[in-house]
Image 1: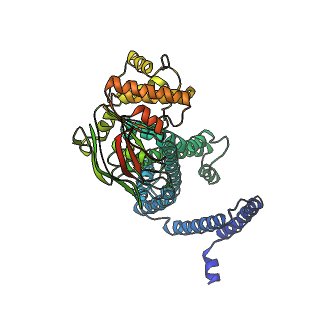
Image 2: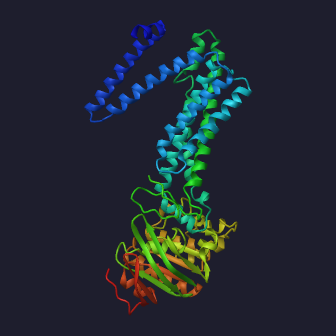
Image 3: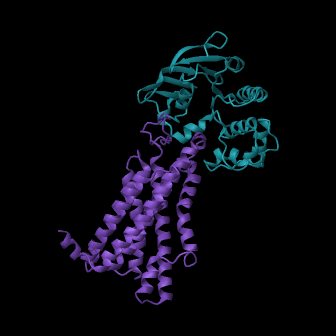
Length: 277
Length: 222
């Protein structure tokens, strides 16, 4: 069986695994260093490393098998990735009803819109070898924006329950009372992507550009194309964060305009279930 | 003016308010007293529907408040909380907030008049971050009054203030109730304050109404 597995892997894959072993060894050393400083991340780090490696090897194998598949197959793969992204992002919204669908629709709206625009403008070729890697980058960033936006929005509301209820007591619409917190949540979720765009080429040369240059493309075109991708990542993140916080806003109030989001330990006070912190 | 009918609030296994029935007459000040955890604030929050009753209801001028849109109800039943919870910005923007939610614009003269009434003349352009606790609570009161409520709910409005500020706010409440004829329900843990402010007092224990009557006749244990 080992022989069969070895024969299915080409030299590049074996070389990659050897390099991955080096990266894992370095991560393990950092984990030990953290432990020495009483920062316990052994279990999480081990799970993350194993999951990351296994997932990437599997994705590589799937891509190798589907390299010449149709646009439909590519879209199905991206849909599965969106579901997985929603499942990952929803961990920040434990206890909220409909949270999984909230994350799914937010990520799908952000990533879907941007991928559709890229396909329509031909800045993304409709073949799997191109669609899936670029699409996955956009989905992953939309996932991060979604998680950051909903987490920040929840934290802001929980930190300002008094202000929100003061606004409600003065006859304000629920959306007015949380508007400043929605704005800061969306802004906070976009900051890393804005920094990414600002530092493009100065602090880092992303993988897509590096790959294109290595495979012989014009470095200037590769740079412009990389800009397009990072700009699209920013656009997808913005749409995702806006949709996520707007959907969440409708869920943190009851139908009688009562705040349903409460810190752990506080008594639920509305006609609908309180959302645990 | 305000009547509660079998008003109850249960959260999980805990009864916060149990079957409270009380009538508050137009223009009167009713004090709600009782030990900590008696359900005084929970009761008050049910009156402007910041929280939902598990059973029972509240009648505002004989109308079931569930038939009134929450925004309209809360304009009619204003609330001043234990902490001022002012919005970032100027004093004037805080006072103009309530009317602006209905598309009304308070003039500078109207804002100045409200500030004068609460003893803060010339404070309109001050940043709320530079106010003392007593000043902030006065701004919160002016902000609520800007909505011209018919009922004023006050949840221990002086509990975070020093003695001098307490007396100032109490005089203010008495003056405003008298001038405007508003109905007032005030939660306090201070028996002396209830005696100074309220014609009638209701005593709560473990979420239940255990006594109600003229303040001088009602005794309670803090």
